[in-house]
Structure formats: structure tokens, C-alpha cells
Amino acid sequence: MKRLELYDTTLRDGCQSEDVNLALEDKLRIAEELDDLGIHVVEGGWPGSNPRDEEFFRAAKRLKLKHARIAAFGATRRAGVRASEDRNLQLCVKAETPVVTIVGKTWDLHVRDDLRISLKANLEIIHDSIAYLKKHADTVILDAEHFFDGFAANPEHALACLAAAADAGADTLCLCDTRGGTLPEAVGAAVDAVRAALPRAHLGIHCHNDCELAVANTLAAVEHGCVQVQGTINGFGERCGNANLVSAIPVLQLKRGYHCVTPAQLQKLTDVSHLVYELANLEPQKRQPFVGQSAFAHKGGLHVAAVRKNAETYEHMDPALVGNAQRVLVSDLAGRSNLLFKAERFGIDLASNKPAVTALLEELKVLEARGYAYEGAEASFELLMQKALDGDRVRYFRLIGFRVIDEKRHESEEPIAEASVMLEGPDGTVEHTVATGNGPVNALDGALRKALKKFYPEVEQVKLHDYKVRVLSTGEGTAAVVRVLIESGDELERWGTVGVSHNVIEASWQALVDSMDYKLHRERRRRARRVPHAG
Image (cartoon, rainbow, N blue to C red; front, side):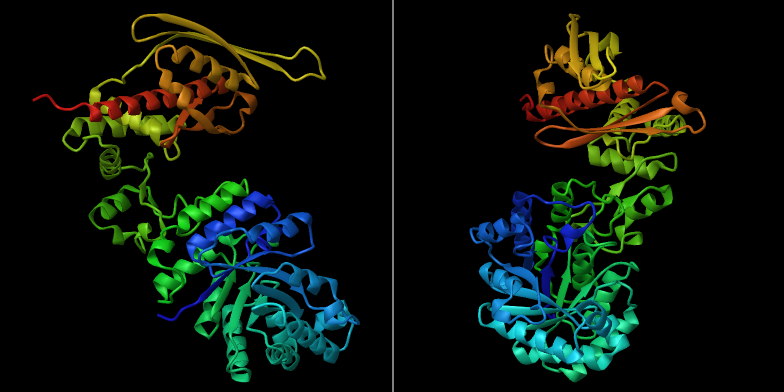
């Protein structure tokens, strides 16, 4: 297997994404995770561009990385300034990283209209900057900015820029599709020309995604001879983003036969992807290839029937290879195969109870017609499935009533929310509690927990992680039907529940009750498994 070098720029180029802002602790955590993933070079940022990046390079020296090398990023020297006196190059040296990457102009348009110097002077700037850095760093990389645009406009100068860097000792010449507008066939042709002109050069590829071709262009460059792949986790980056390493790595390794990381490291891909989303405070993309929640999800009954027999019928690869898992969704499109698959996963024996399957299918279709959706509320669906099997739903408490008050006394003050809940516990005891909150749902959640913990102390372990409200019926304004999805969790797992009503408080109550019932249901099952059999 031909080996490729992976170069990650999430901590620099990825942070230039519109919605991404990582704290110092986040950047250090991501660097360690990238090291575990098997990334060879982790670009930490631009020294001197901001205090956070300066501190990163100081703190990164204390990281106990097993595999990755940290890279500092900068630009070639300014025109009219000696390399040894250029502040930007001095800061790159001061970062004391084993790798330094600098960006240099290779498109004559930029040389004339941005730098406003001669093409010959541009070549001298590239050569001087690389030669200076080679005295201070183990590895120096030239990011040949706008190379493919430059090659299309003036191939002689674009190639001369690379030759100047190579002559000065650059270890890698990385060809950049900076505007993201090049097509794969043009990328391949340009790489071929570079290899013909500089046959001994170590070539890299850095693509942007403005035409949604960053991964495709990366693959084309590798097929034509590039051996270093630059990109970011989840494709974060300027404008439309960079080449997504989360897609490029498995395609190159599993589809094209290149060696990027070990099989064990590849299995960490989904976790790393989701961690970076979480640290960036962004919701993971469900439909992201390979690692998305929907990447190996099946909804149609015919699809599910087929994958139960052989997953290859509708899955292009084993999701476990990248740390993901097959999912079967339930909806009004579901057939018996969906339900039996889900029941098997939940440890519920529906297969031997055909009437329960038929009843569950019918109830599911009715509920979804009313607006219920179980694709993000598998806990609610498991309770529904258990009800079909038992003939009735197990009730851990009985609601006597609740009341919610939302009061605003002055225009300049925040509203005051208060909720009271009265319920009957399993021993017939009535509990009446009151709680305040940031809003009516928060207050209701607090009152329910206060009442339940008298009977079930374990509910205190439940944390509410996410709360979403969606309007379902259009044209009805504030009288519309709404669906509430709640994600809850404890120290062991997370689960989703759903509620639907014209009244958002009632819909929220349904989802809250399902969340608590699910917690108590799972605790009862865990305790049952721990009880030894008699005899």
C-alpha cells in the first residue's frame, strides 16, 4: 500500500470558518485527538496573529504527542525586507515547531495586483524565505497559493515558483486550489506537469470546496502523484470550507488502497468528527458521509428487509470500519422488518408475537399522521414497542395535574416562570411540588423532577441536553401543532423522546414524561439482569 502523509489544518484554516471559534483548551484537545487518529502534521495556527495562537505554540510543547508533529504557519517575507529581519518569519522560528509552512504567491495576477512587484522579485522572495527557514526548522513546506489558477494563466511562472522553493530546500511543495474553482481533470493535468518539471519533488495538495469538489480534487491529485494530503476535520474552513479529511481518509484508504492510518485509528474517525463539532459548538451534520448519524440509516421497509439479510445490499461499506453503526429508522414507511430489527436491538422479543407487530405498525402510522416522529426519539419508540408487547404501558406514576404560570410584571424585566406538579407515586402517596425556571418548560421539568425523586432518586442523574420545537402545521400561526424533541442522558447513555400537541407545554410534558419513564424502564431492566436466577 502506498503511504500518504496527512496534514491537518483544522486549528488554522478550519478556524477561519464563519461559525468556528475554538478556545485554547479546545485547540489543545483537538491536537491530541488528531494525534490519536494518526494525523502526521497538525498545523496549530499563525504565530503572532493573535494571543491565543501564540499561547497554543507554547502550550503545545507540553503535549505528549505520540505521532503528530506540530506546524507553524506564516507567509513569505515582505518585499524589500530581508528574510532574517521579517517579523512574520521570525515569529515562525520563535514558535520552535519541527514543521513550518509558509504560503507563497504563484499566480502572476496576485504578484502584479496584490504584491505589486516583478515576477523575478516574487521568485527571490520565495527562495529567500524557504532558505532562511531551513536553517531553523526540520521541515519546511511551501503552500503554493492559487497554484492551479496560476498554472492556467502563466504555467511558466507558476512552475518557476515551485522550482525556486525546491532549490532553496523546501521539503514539500503543496499545490493549493485556493479559490476552490478548479475541476478534477485540470488538477490531474497540472500535477502531471509539476512532476515532469520537478520529478524528485515531494508534492502535497490543498483544496477548497467552493464547487463542492475539494475531496474529488484531492483524490485526483493523489492519483497523479501527490503524497501529502491537506484538509480539515468536517471540512471546516474559509467560505465553503476545505477538503474534508473525514471523507478523504476513508475514500483513499478503503476505496483506493492507500495507507493513511491504521485500521484501529480509522475506527476513531466518527468520534473525532463529533468531538470537533462539539468543541466548535456546532450540531453534527446528520447526512455527512461515513460519520453522520444518517450515513448508514435505513428507513424504507424494502431497504430494511434487504439489509437484515445482507447489509451489502444498501451499504457501500461496513460502518464499523470508521466507528459508525447501522441504524434502522421507524416511520409511516416502516414495515415489519424495521420493527423486528429495532426490537432485536432493544432486546425485545417481537418476532414471536405477530399480533403485537401488527398493532404496533398500525399505531405507528396513526401517531406519525398526527405529527409524531421517532427517528430522533428512539426512547419514546422503545416505550411504544414495550406497550405493544405488554398490552399496556407500564406507569411509574400517575399525573393528578400540573399548572404553569408565566408572569411578566414590568417591560424591562424578564418573565417569571413557575410550575406546580401533583402526582401519585407507586405506593399511592401523593406528592405536590413547585419549581421556578428560566421558562415554563424549564420550571415544569424542575417540578416533575422534585416530585419524582421522592419515589425514584435515580431521576436526579438525568440531564437535559437538547430541546427542540418544530411547527408542523402551516397557515395556523400560533395555533399550529408543534412537535417537541428532547435529548436527555445520564452517565451511561443519551436518549431522545417526543411529544406533539397544539399546546407547546403539553407537547413538552409528553416528552419529559417519556424521558423519565425511559430512565426508570432502563433501570428496572438493569436491575433484573443483575438478579441471579433461583436454584
